[in-house]
Length: 432
Ligand code: PMP
Image (cartoon, rainbow, N blue to C red; front, side, top):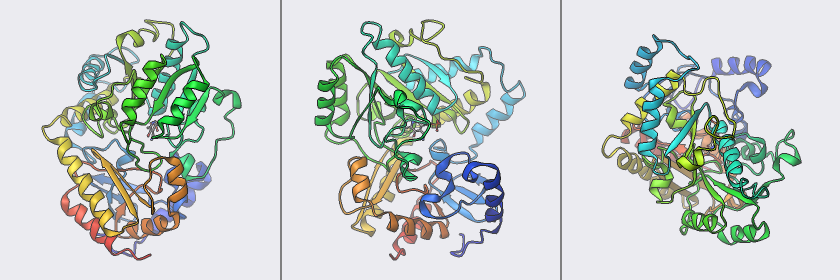
C-alpha cells in the first residue's frame, strides 16, 4: 500500500501546465481539489478498485469516475466488447441494432420507463426532460411551465436549474452562476429537500402553474442525503393531485441504489426518469424515458425537438449494455449495499460527530453534530475544516474520496472487505 508520504512531483508539474491551458487546470470544477485547499493527483491508470497517479501512488478509489464504475475499473467483459465493436466503426449517426437491445434492457430494468431517448450526458438528459415536461403540461394550460427544484440538488449545468445547485456549485460556494439570466431561472421554484410543508405551500402559491417537480430521489450532490418519512411517496401524491409531472433525476441513483434505481427501491413511480453515469459503462451517455404517452411528444414522433450527433453511438451503447448485463447477477445489489453499510457504520462508530448513510452502492458521511436532512442543514452543521484535514489524511494513506464534503461516495463490485478494513483502520488513525 502507498506510503503516508506521497511523492506528487509529476502531478504537481502536470497541474502547472494544465492551469495554463484549462480553466483551473481541469475540465470539470470539483476535480481541481480547491475545496480542500490542495491539488489533484493526475491519474494514469486504473484496475478494479484502484487508481494510480502519475507518480505511481496507488489509491483505493471511491469516486469511480463520479459513479459510472460500479463494476470497478477495466471490467473485462466491457473491454472485450468494446474491442470487438470498434472494428465495425465508432459512430454512424444512423440507427443500429445495439440501440434496440440497449433500449429493451433499460425498459426491462427501470420500472416506469416504456420508451426512451439516449443522449450523451446527464446534463443533456435533464435538459431534455425539463423541455419534455413543459411541452407536455403546457398542451392544455400554457401557464403550466414552472419547475420545482430542491435546494442542493444538482441536475447538471443547465441554465434553468443552476440555482441553489449542489455539487461543484456548492463546493465552490457559488450562489448562482454569472451568465445565467434571471429569465432563465424565473420559472424555477426552490423548496428544501425532505420538507413537504414547504412543497405544499409552493403548490398553493403557484396554482396551475407547476409543470413538474424534479428531484434527486437520494441526494448525492449535497453529500449523501436520504429521503425521509415517505418523502418520495408524498411527492408523487402531491404532483398527481396538482396535475404536475414528477421527474426523478436518476443520473446518479439509476442502477446505483438498486437495479431499478430509486423508483424501485422506494417503490415510487415518476413520470419521467433521467439516466446517466452507470448506463454508459464508463463511456459518455445519458438517457431520458417515460411512458409511451409522454415520450410521444418527442420529435420526430411529436413536436418537442431534441437531437444529438453522437447519441446512441455503438461504443457507448456497447459499454452500457455489457455493464447492465453484469449488474443483473443475483445478489449484486445486496452485496454492494452490505459493503456500503459496512463502511458507513464503521465511520459512524469511529467518531460520534460523523453522520453517515448509504443506499445501495452509494454512501456518504458528514462531520456534523446534527442530522443532515437537506442542503440547509448541510450548510449549517458541516465542519468543513475537519473534513478537509480528514480528506488530506486519507489521501496521503492512499484512499481517494470525492474531494468535497458535498459529494457522495461510490462503492463498486471490485472493492473487497480488505480494502474497506484498510480504509477504516486509516480513518481511526485520523487526529483532529
Ligand atoms: N444529475 C445528477 C443527479 C448528477 O449527479 C449529475 C452529475 N453528477 C448530472 C445530473 C449531470 O450529469 P453530467 O455530468 O453527465 O452532465
